[in-house]
Structure formats: structure tokens, C-alpha cells
Length: 263
Ligand SMILES: [Mg+2]
Image (cartoon, rainbow, N blue to C red; front, side):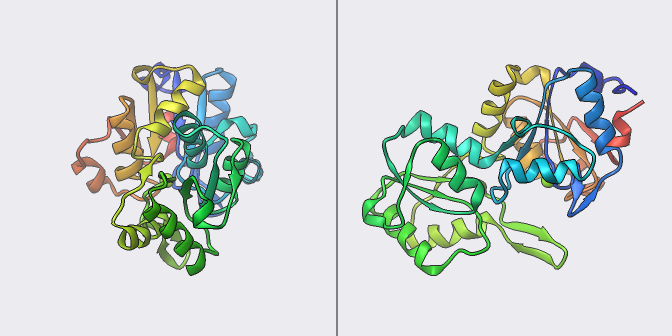
């Protein structure tokens, strides 16, 4: 099996996961075949996700359950983007006040920052989504942000799809803090460009040779376009065909599912 023209021409692939590779616990059609082709053709790719809750190891396990076998270095998350941004702009030693899940805590620790839970001790504030955020944590973050600490956020997604409907996403947490501080964070995840630039740098690829595959127009497609990549919208997730065809910037390619990439 090979990639169909014109898709075979791209020499680097950035691939969203939720709504593209799987939906909840269910793998989507041809996801495993698509990744196997990239691997056998030695075409560089990264899984690019705004989701800051899981760690790389957790993603690797989840993908393996769907017969997709990759190493941790095939995953690039919004915490990775936050880590790269922090190292470039606020290098350690520094103390980070973190509100978020395992993925963010791990990235901040790997970058060499000490964590603090107290606003008065914080040099930087890093915020993403977690399912056990408390008022007390948000209050400490708000106090640190009001003190003038740089405020970095993983992603702006206002909602998080679940079996029961749309749950509050990281963007809802940011809205809470924005209301409490009259400040806005620096967002590193999709659709902002840092995560795309860092992912391309990791692959050693140029934007014009690369393609972003995603299901969400306002993050994957808008962000890929802003970063100078070609964009492919797959209709197995957030967007309908009507929404994709009428979105500005219009995706360069729109496909029903990943089977359309393969011949
Ligand atoms: Mg998605």
C-alpha cells in the first residue's frame, strides 16, 4: 500500500489524534494502515495534540492498543510546546506554578523548573486542563498572574468532547482566570504557531513541504494554515463537510476518512 497522489508528495506529516486516528476508545478506519505506510516509506511524521492531560507514555500505550506502534518521540503535545517556549523565553532556574494534568507537570519538571503551589514564590504560571482543578489552585494562579508573572497556557479549546457531550476544556479554565485577572495568556498550542514551528523543527522539515491533518477547523486547519503548511481536514471528528468547505481558510484537502489517502 502507498499514499495516493497528491498526498505522496508531502515529506513531513503533522497528525492530530482525537477525531483523526481515534474517536474515544475506537480507532478510525485505516488509521493503522496510514501510519504503517508513513513508517515503511520512512516519511517523517509527528502526532500533534493540544490535549495536555496525558503523558507521552500514556499515548504510546493507547496507540499500541489500536495496532499503531510508535515511540514516545513520535508524540508532540501542547506541554512539549510549552516546555520549548519556556526554555527559550524564561530559562531555569525559575519556579513554576502549574495548574494542569500529568502531561504539564512532567514537561515542566523535565525542563528543569521547580514547582511551587504558592503565588508569592512563583516566577511563571503554566495552565492547562486537568479534571481535578480546585478553586484554591486557581486562586494561587490568579494571584501570581496579577503579580505580573508570565502566564503560558497549553491550548485554547473551550470544550472537550466526551461520551456525555461537551465538557469544559482548557479554554474554559483560561476564561475563568482571564475574568479574575484582566490578563490574557500566551497560548502555545494549536492554532497558535509555536507548536507547529517546534514540531517542524523536530522533524527537520520546512513548512512548505509539510501537511497538517486534523478534524477541527479552528485549531488544526487555522493553525496549520497560519504556520504555512498545507492542510487536510478529515471528516471523522469535529467538522462536517459543509463547515469545512465554507471555512476560511478553506482546508487544502477535505476527505471523508483516512482510507481516501491510500491506494
Ligand atoms: Mg482532533
